[in-house]
Each structure stands twice: as C-alpha cells, then as structure tokens.
Amino acid sequence: MFITAKVWKEDDSWIAEIPSIDGVTYCGLDEDILDYVVDYMKCLDIDVEARRESDSVIAMKVLEPRTLIAQILKRLRGDKTLSEVARKGMTRTMFHQYERGSRDASLATFSKLLSALGADFEIVVRRNAQ
Image: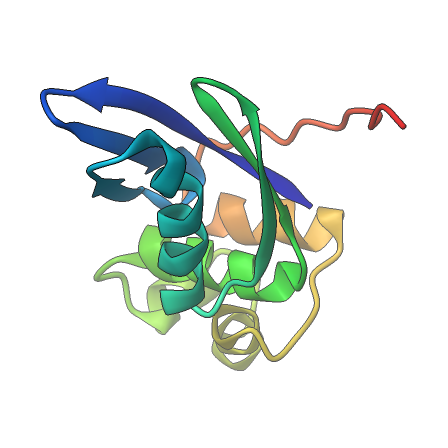
C-alpha cells in the first residue's frame, strides 16, 4: 500500500501534507522534510519506506497496512460511537478490531468500513515501474 505527501515551501518553512490521514508536518530545510515525514508517520505507529518522487511529492510504502487502515478509521469515525458505525452492517467488536489494527482488512472489507463511516474515498490501483 502506498500513500503520498504533498510538499511545498511557505515563507521559511517546508511543509508536507499527507491527505490520506489529514496529517501535516514542517521543517526549515528542504533536505530534512523526508525525515520529518517518516518521523511523523512513526509517531502514528505507521512504518513507511519513503522517497522523494519529485520536488513536490513524497511517496511512501506502508510496511504494515493494518496500521494505516486503523489510523484512517480512527480519524474518520470522529465522535461517532461504535454502535452508530455497527448499524451500517458490521459488529462493534469487528469494527473495533480493524480500528485498533489487530485485524487485516481485504480491499472489499476496507471499502465496507469506509462506507460504514460515510466516507468518500478513492482507491487507486496502479502498476509500479520496476
């Protein structure tokens, strides 16, 4: 699973936005922004291998997708209760297992979880250049 960060300079800071998790980090030097993004992800318990794809994009390979899925679910659920989410076709226990990252989700299950939260997400499948 791959995600990206958008990078730009604003005043004296380099900013990286990670849209899939509503995350933002910044630093003073362009050459440090990659490390700041990796550290930010580690703070969320998401291990990534990151590389600069261009001046404005950092590509990240998520090493344990269940941790990313858990973070996305936590952020999207917000203040909805597990009972409210469970009414959408999944038990509270099952949803909570995905949200804690203790259960792997197939693509179909991830889509179902997002639907239960009323999320509008785009899942893109692309072939990696070797």
